[in-house]
Image (cartoon, rainbow, N blue to C red; front, top):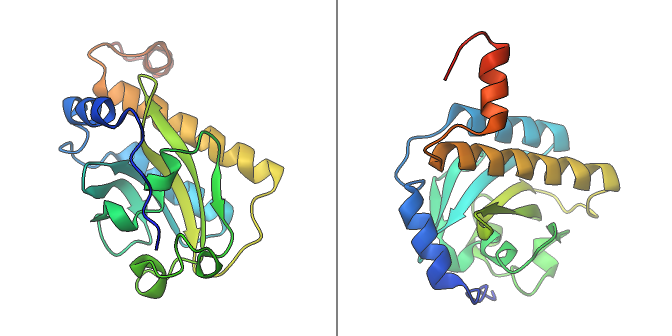
Length: 181
């Protein structure tokens, strides 16, 4: 197993993550629904929004995973911190970075992984990912767009959760529903 190196902006990234309060906030129904929809759309049993802290990966929302966190050193999503585009592992058992990973050799037996970086204030805090128990050749163009678009929805929701002012998109939704904020 090859652990992901820490990005150059690691101290800034960790300060921002801590200052947002996202690690302490309760689960969010929007993110929970989003990961369920993403998993179904890809016909895969697992999906998550992960936030990468100093020593752990926390799942802000997840479906199909037996735990709410894992050690950072075995995190697939920690590799996404370095990857500005979708990060795809077609068969984790054949990838030297992951072949001996406890998430591959044991529960939840990840074989396929695809994740996109999640940014807040221009800093990557984690990933939106989908995972499966069987190898998969990768994602087609439509699936790449879907995963990227879902990642953008996660970013917008995290911005809403951490911003003292509602976003313009949130204002439009509120106006359309007849409520004011």
